[in-house]
Image (cartoon, rainbow, N blue to C red):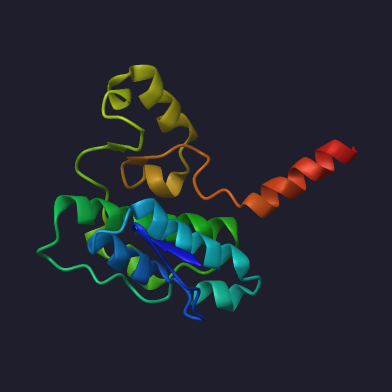
Length: 161
């Protein structure tokens, strides 16, 4: 089953590409649900080419997009660059399109707008955020896209040592 907004839809054989995740965001889906669906499919794939197929197509970003949609498009591009670097995958050419250039205003991904006003929170995010996001003026910390299976394996190794 996949979460889609407030409803649950049955599992399908169709994988959630980053392009589809972005479309879902533009259509009103909670961004972390759409990106979570992408992430689940990305981490479920073990083969490099199967993973790459999830982001080879560029996002369908129009010139008339809202500022929020633009932010998420840039975030999606940074996500692909980050995941490609982490999992030794070739970066698709569309990532370098100027439409995914750094945001004009820094975006601090925090739970509340008030948290972004706290200098120590901003400093921590600026220090911990991976380069693919920093270069685009997005500050999300270092826990973005943690693979729960990899983290569980690390914990098992620590516990058995």
